[in-house]
Image: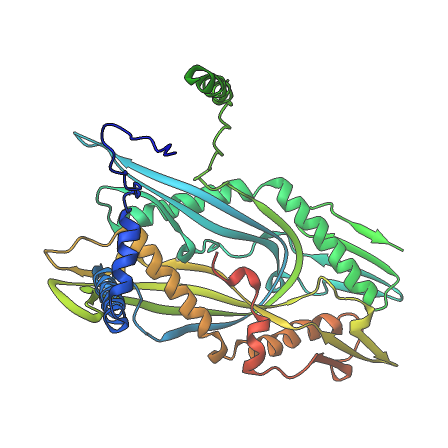
Length: 235
Length: 224
């Protein structure tokens, strides 16, 4: 018995549907068909392009220009104007800074110059002012009479260290000289006071006492001239 | 289905937005920069015997020309611009003093043998105690196309001049003079203590040479 059944309609079998190939797989397939020499050539070309791009970039980046002005001074000799033998004992140094400014009124805007000056005032005694027999020895005791404490040098500003803080407008050398004088007077007024002079006297007494004790004297008396009552006496 | 997928995303977004919000932290106050230096008075007790003083004079000169410097395609160039020159000469005077520091002087520095006495002094030191610019004698020439020397530029040249003076100190022989003068100052003093001049000897730690000078310069002498 024939049980075969006849199907009606479209009877042709449907072919199996294959998925659409992707771009990547197409590319890999294409690469697979290309020879190795061509692949190598392409890789070399890409490498050369990268190297050339880097060299051009470096050349462009290294290009630049600046306007420069050399700020170094010329070589000139230092001349010794004078040599002096001195005998100055410094017992107190006072370092000070002073900011000095000067202003000039103008129509539109004021001109201003501000500078910072540095100086060190040295207080002590000048050995050229000691009177005869200022050291009196009596057996094991010694009496030292020192001249009064004073400012050892009126030139105490280190003007070459001056800091230029602010400048607007034009200023002359006379203006700077005037500012220096103002700084000097301010420092002198601020630092040369009674308190500092007394401190220098006390230190002078102590230092000379130690010096005389080092020399072997057991009884030491330190005095000052000019009516100063600073007396240090130790036994 | 779509709603079920969206709900967790909405919740997550809500949480994230809450985390990003909130109070802004109070910005920390920016540090105050004091551009004006403190006016400092530094008082120092000491015991220095200055024995020699050198007054030195130096003319600080400077001339400059504007130049265009740079590189093109890795080739360097240096072109002088036709803007003209500037020149300046600044005379300055400085005072150098050599001293002996007696702060650490003690019995160890004194040797006695009967009626003879030997004083061993500490190393002498050199200090620049002052400098002065001679403003009236400054000479300058500035081309029309250039700007005048500013106060800051003058300060730079003066500082360099000061440093040049310090570099020239070893050539001046100031240490040898300081040693001689220390003896001339101390011997009369010791004589008054009762020692005859022939029994007094002043010695130093060693004989100093030019190579020792850097260690004998006072630290305050160097520029700020």
